[in-house]
Length: 621
Image (cartoon, rainbow, N blue to C red; front, side, top):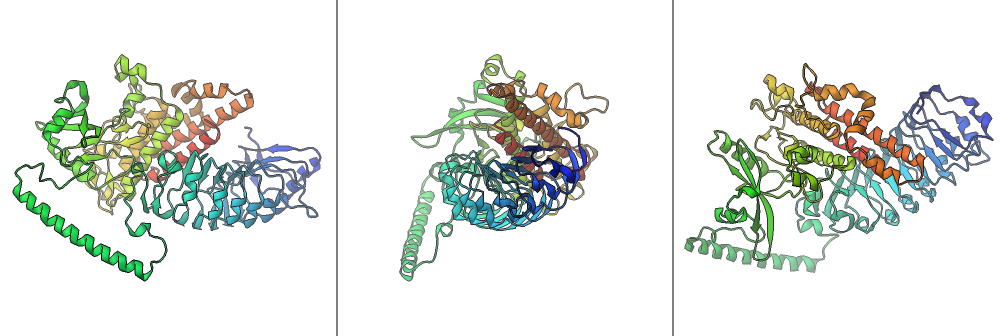
């Protein structure tokens, strides 16, 4: 990276017989793109990404003779991260050799995606993300059968996903998030065996979600923010589909009559069953037999079952203890053939606030459900068991005994980032999508639990609080419940008597993010005399990468890169990694600002972290 500034000279066409590659990425160039760039016939690569260019994209960059354009050999065009406006020139989509990269992301481009995009039949990567493009996804895009990356996130696209995209079977990354797309999620996506990342979040998709292919893995497919989706794997946290949502098309009169008759019969059977079981309940003296819950549920479990599951609450099964009680690992029988691991919380009722904490936790958890929240399985606070323990144990393995420490590797950068995104999306759900906003009030590493797939789940809702709809992120209008949380993670305004708000959770999330990637607790002894983790991270600025490389997972990414025989590839990966680190720390700093109104929203934080992850995945990290 250099530090060029000013405008690109019009005299650049004087080198029309010389230039094969032009790379002006990551500078401070301004002004418009000179039309003379379209007069470089031997140009194969043009990269002017991450500058301050304005104006429209000159159409003659892509015009075919007899007009001015002569760039028939251009195979890579990257103009992302500028201030370019206007529509995508149709002429630029007629370049016959454009086969590597076409990147116009992070500009201000508007209008529709031209149908001529289907001419780029040899293109490997198309990135039009984060513009203001509108209209529908052109069906001609299905002709670009060599695409491996298609990123259209962050636009104003609407309508259904065209069926022609079923031809893009080589896609590894497909991101359609943050648009206004609607209709059902196409079934053909489950047949894309090469997909590493599928992001359909924050659209208006509806209907049943598949449980096959990429949709079997909740870490590969992201669908949050589509409130009318149903079904799918349990990890997605979607509601069950109603009968109506699975119907397609109209019904004939005969079918309607049959359905009506069957419905009446089922209703009669249900009524008779209800009366029968009500009669049995009056006769039985066994409270367990009186339970209306059947099947694979723990709602009717007894103290005796919990005693057996935990080996009489043996200390060998103790997972953790706090002032309000202890948590034990247990193996409990679901039915005659099935057992499952659970986490059982036992309250210390000698503590004055323990029962109040129990009631608060039940009140919150009965109303919320999300794939990144630890599921409550019964009223006795029996949770699903998280086999990989807490994030605290992975960030600070010194807490574990020697045997446990030896079994665990350090978390990679990508693993840390995935966990951070999991937590961010769960918070976004609590704050914005769970009905009444919920504030967790105690977000910290020990309350982030990791399942067998290392997916992060938020647990311990003992301090959580419902907010009225008007509260949202304004501390002045939130619920007053006094100081909440843990020292170092609790928002500073709580200590000054301010009321609880969702922005308090955002502060805790920012501190958590900084701890995950800087390797220091907010209570580290080095933070004194006004210095804290937030100030320390903010002072790093763009130099954060130099320090982070020494703190977070030393050597892991370098080892992966060293297998490559190309030094250039190693340097590119290292550059992407360092840029990602700086971005992550900046997000953590913005989330943990002292003033609540200056903090980034949790939805923006999760989205930006997902964008960082996409860049790391593209770089092969």
